[in-house]
Length: 78
Image 1 (cartoon, rainbow, N blue to C red):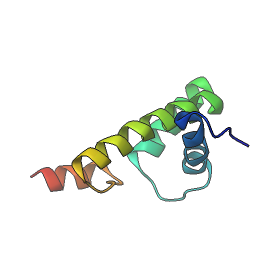
Image 2: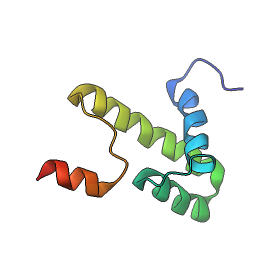
Image 3: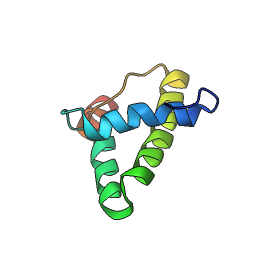
Image 4: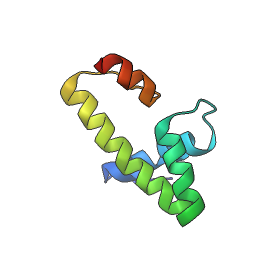
């Protein structure tokens, strides 16, 4: 059970779910799985949690929605 103190600790649970349970592909999941092969699942969870924190912060500041793929991002930018 994660402690409620540090926000990054709280984001390791969604990061674990993204890496192990979510069937839908995303660039974040692919990056995390490649990292898990290299460095192990434990480190990959923390790295994905940190990246997720950065993405969430950017989404809150910009008011944008999460883009599952980089192709969606390219279409919206064009």
